[in-house]
Structures are given as structure tokens and as C-alpha cells.
Image 1 (cartoon, rainbow, N blue to C red):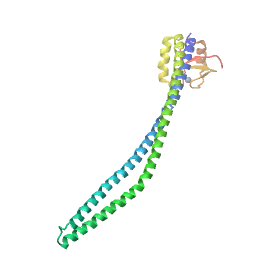
Image 2: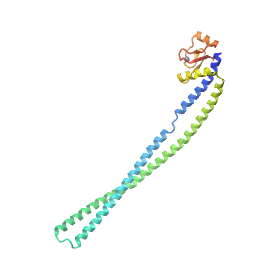
Image 3: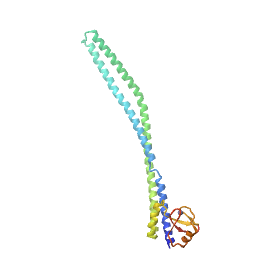
Length: 238
Ligand SMILES: [Zn+2]
């Protein structure tokens, strides 16, 4: 009887629906994209704070070299002035002017160094905070990965159990009908066969015409639902 054979396919269908549902639920779980995005943001913040501190320190280093070089030039200008080699007032004035100029420039460099030194501590603190944020985000990624691994293992275990159950049902089923069912469910959103309960197709909830209901009860022909086009079989009143 075809109806009996389809009932067996219906048991395969139940398992296939559970597999689809399980796969769908699993596909909705974030594998860690959120935590990963937060980590990348925290990393960018940390790198930015680190770069800022580095820039400040580099400028201080440059200015210290400049200040030192102004100092050295001043010493050599003074030596020139007082060594007795300069005989006219014009040359002496030029050296005095250069000395004043060097003094101003050294003063400016030293002022800027002090200004930058005031920025070092806040920049350091900012970098520490950014580092802590980065560490926290890293820990969260690891934590999430561990949880996700567990969830995936559970999913795979359940899927394995369902596949074992499916294999058992498939062994009981008619191979030709199974092939037809597989082709049908590919076309119809994973559902290839449906029981008719209380005169209604359980896949699309449409009433089956009386004549077809009679044929289904006889159970000798392969029937499809006029509305959803899936294979249907008769099930005792629910
Ligand atoms: Zn239907």
C-alpha cells in the first residue's frame, strides 16, 4: 500500500524537519563576530594611544637635540667674540645679534619641551586605559570562542543522533519513493511529504477535497496536495 509506504517516508520527514530546524537555529548563533569587532576597535584605540605617546617622545628628543645644538653654537660664538679675533664693532654686533637669536630659539625649544613633558603622563594614562580595554576585549574573544566551541559540539552531537535515527528510518523506507521525496523536499522548502489529519494537509493547512480524501483512505495511489503540491498520506483522525 502506497499510504503505508508514505507513512514511513513521513517518519523520515519528521527527522529531516528536526535537522533543518537544528541547522537553522545553529546558523543564527554569532560565531564571535561581535566580540571580534570589539577587539579590533580596542586594538585600534590602543595603537592610536601608543602612537600618540611615541610622537610626543620623539618630538621631545628632537627638541632636546636642537636645544643642545643651540647651546653649542652659543658657546662657539662667545669664544669667537672673546678670543680677541674680532676687531671691529660691526662684527661684534653681528655676533651679539646671533647670540640673542640663539638664546631665543633655545628658550622656545625648552618651553616646548616643558609643554610636552606635561602631555607625557596623560598620554601614558590614556595608553594604559586603552591597553586594559584591549586585554578585556581579548579575554572576551577567548571566552566567547570557548562557549561557541561548546555550542558547536552540542549541535554536532544532536545532528549526529538525528542522522543515526534518519539512517534507521531510511532503511525501512521504499528507495524509489525516498528518491521522489528527496526531490520534492528540495523544491518545497524542506518538506516533501505531509500527513492529512482531519481532512487537512498538515503542510499547508488546506482542506483536501472529499473525492481525494476517499482515494487517500484507499491508499493505493500516490497523491499530492492540490495547494502545496507535496505528497500526502492519510493519517487516522487526530
Ligand atoms: Zn498542502
